[in-house]
Image 1 (tube, rainbow, N blue to C red):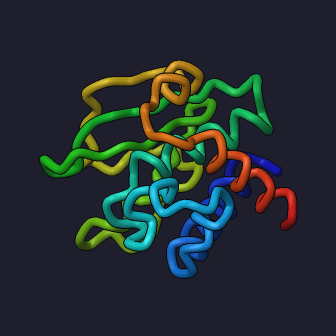
Image 2: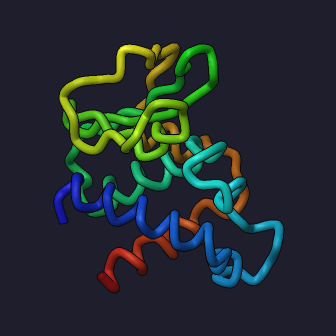
Length: 145
């Protein structure tokens, strides 16, 4: 799968899992659910971005993947780039944004970056519990497609 296809599939998986709340059943614990997934794309840009980046990195380990932390109109937000292409699978949580950014060369003018990290550094330091189980679940779902 190409990064654009992975991004579309991961977004679909997160939407489905948010509705069904079945991702918790992977690890059988309420505390292991991805935060705010039931509200996807709202309020879950951080875990969604890290999981997308980690999934792409697993499938395309030689890609240059950067995680951006910043703001969208003064609201904290996360997105990533893969080999220079922009991916923001949760930007449509904001008013007047109709669709995600998947593999674009153009960034939304309201996204302002405050820091950038390599996916390997970002994902390894991401302090959300159970991130590996979530990633394994996402990769299995991708493989099943």
